Length: 301
Image (cartoon, rainbow, N blue to C red; front, side):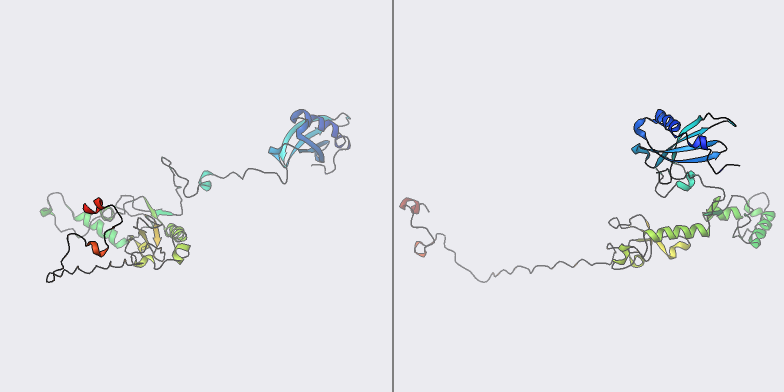
């Protein structure tokens, strides 16, 4: 059991602890004595201020001890420890918890956990559906009965005409033959992210003349999410190529502004019935010619 009261001889060995700290770190890196803490019976740790600017708030810890019934205090260890107000590195987290959207680069691989809440069991490629499949038991039984009726040979040799295919063939035709698909939780999480980035509460949508629901650049999505989201196809819009909420909007709405039709100038009017005589030489009496010049210049005008 650790003693709460520091040993007297060990607590008085401040000079011994200071000399050891100076020897380990240098005179300029060790400051005043802070406290002496009992680590056990006849074991005391002396703390000194660390004056190194790179370790602000840290403390030099020098542990001293003495043997039972002995009066000689000896050194145990000297370390640099963080203090209550020291700058420390953040707590270590696993890479999967540190990863944030946008951290992946070209060539990076992001493996998914086996129990990822965003995914659920999909089609494995086998005829038997998974336990939580949406395929009904009646359809599975019907497919099994149909497979039993199929015989070898051409189609004309079959006893009955197949009405439906196997579960695997149907899943492959519908594009659902995947090992795992998004769960409802995964769909809601994705919808929340998209709505936060390109939703009705953004500043761009608040100032938009209309929503994306009525925009001609909106590309509809497939599945249940098409009721609330689409893909922007306006190359000049701020969300080009991104999934946007139908309530989102921007100034690039297809019907936001209609370009006015340029006015056509009036056709020129040519009066071909009236003749206006035009003199070949200007009249000197009209003052159109500058008579202040020399006579020879007037003669050649």
